[in-house]
Image (cartoon, rainbow, N blue to C red; front, side, top):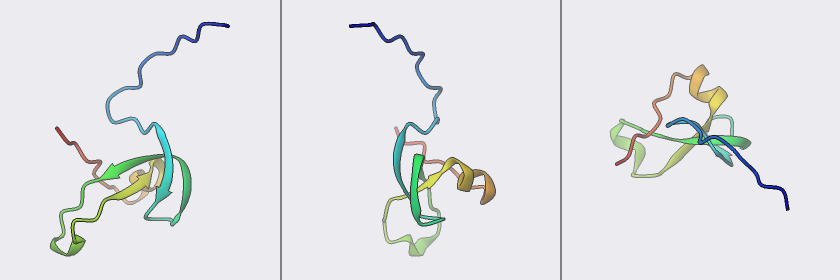
Length: 63
C-alpha cells in the first residue's frame, strides 16, 4: 500500500462536504457559520466557501 502524505489544511479551511444553508444545495466543502442575529434559534448553519465570500459570512471560531 502506498503511503499518503498530505499537509494539514490551514485553520478555517473547509474540509467536509455538506449542505450549504445559503444556496440550499450540497457542496464539496462547507464551514460552520457564526450567526449574530437573535432570531437564529440556536440552529447550526453551514455555508460553502463561495457563499462565505459572496455574502461576507463569518466562519464560527469555536474553542
